[in-house]
Amino acid sequence: MVCLDNPADKRIKKRIVESLTAIQKETLEYIKKNLRVKPPTFEQMRKAFGVKSNQSIIDRLKRLQQKGLIDQNYLPVK
Image (cartoon, rainbow, N blue to C red):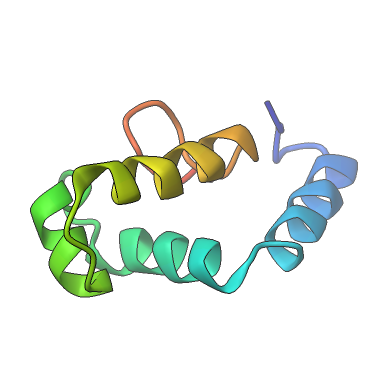
């Protein structure tokens, strides 16, 4: 996991974010924009992205988790 107190880790996170696909960027930005007390629901994300299955959303979220940009609760890592 990236520790953002470390300047080197901040540069790593920036490179990771810059390497995201358009779909990954869209998903991460949607989560950040719609985050209030908790992450948006799968239903809200399905509607926002125009997909029909939860699996599509799960796949998007897993990719962002693997890159260390969201945690296991689908909250953005600061």
